[in-house]
Image (tube, rainbow, N blue to C red):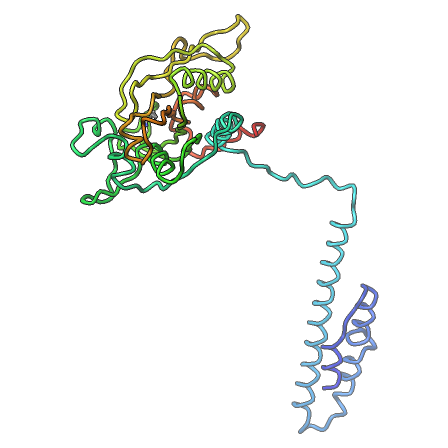
Length: 334
Ligand code: PHE
């Protein structure tokens, strides 16, 4: 019994110590062999008990030696790993920012350079902020322009169809001058195809102050397209939005600028990139801003469409498929 507790308490620092331990118990002249030699002298009635005790001691010693050997080996392995300082490093995988985030951040930076802040709002909206305040009263036919996902009707709760809802919230809470852009996810009940998706991202902008004119709008958009695309040919086509008057659609001229332009310019010519216009006086009134004192402009664009142009991506669905082969291509972008 004393031996057993001695065995259990034993700790070895080196392979040599383990070997000494093995010889002491299990060697030819070791403690165990001495006991086995003793066996013939034990009186018959004690033989059984004696034999069991010696066998127990033997297994304890064998187990301990095995255990110590394993310990020593794993110690050596560790030494091998940490000891060799010339060992090549483990590659650390770095992720890539998603192209939607890259483009969103670029747009935010361009507008923050001319004094716009960033505002955000809820994705689940009420009827007032998504429609009514934006000059789209109930039963207005223009509501059909935006295929809405309803969560609840009467009172209506819905997934916002544009981030214009954030602009309404911002006007309700802030006094002019207002310069804000609202990036965010929007939802429309549309068939999914290469060109459109039921979930996408927008950045909408709003500028309200005294004497803001359509010329200010045009110059702001010109500055923006120059900064983002490096292209400065845009045109404003008359259009209709319930919340702006007059309204326009913005096209950018996308063509081969030089003969050496290497980009695969899939779509060339005039490409539509956003909607814009002067904020309708009704909208200002709905948000407690006096249209006699203030005027302003608003614009809105889809981030996917812009990213598709910038990176020449042919299918909007690629943004949401999480295909590493696609995402990895943006590693070098910030
Ligand atoms: N809210 C419009 C849309 O989602 C875009 C827009 C914003 C148009 C502001 C004009 C002014 O389609």
